[in-house]
Image (cartoon, rainbow, N blue to C red; front, side):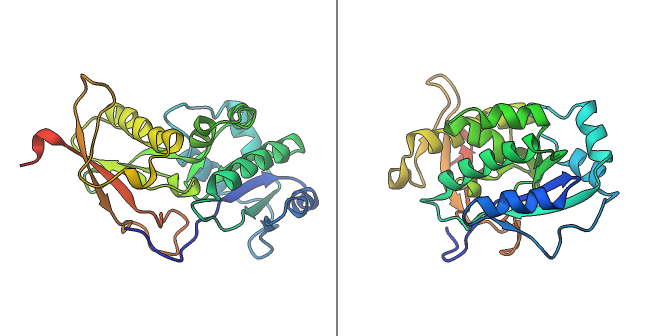
Length: 242
């Protein structure tokens, strides 16, 4: 259930006042690109709504000061990471997070991850960048829960080299706990080929069990930044299976 040959990349929307600084920071980091086509177009009145719509809802961190900074931006830049193979994704994701911190330290007003539709406030970005572990990378780049056609799901695990997670029949709160638990299991334990369709997963020995089914990413087009070439793990309640 993978799209062979497709490669994800982290795309950052950077609100700032000085294009030269953003361009120079990109040049310092091997493999990163300053998008000359869509950057440096001046202030964009759509940005406050776009950043608000993509704010993290699990741990909200966008403050009034962040919102004022977004409104006052003078320019928009788009920064692209190197293309990511599953084997290199976590390393590139960590480098991208350090780049976010450097951009903010040098005057960026706000930053959004276009590849997951996810915005954090300045302080949250900085806190995540100060931590060197998979949990911080997950918090930085993975948005959840999103909803589509009766399913709740994550978006952004492709930026770490793994399938996203989808499930149905649970509350949004329970979905977040399950998505987080299973995703961090992938990131930390790295079961790899030991994780197979038909296996079961449970957060705790006394918690409900879910059977795993691998599905392709069909809700986003192949050229969409949200598209996950690794597909999804769908968690299906064991009690519902016959």
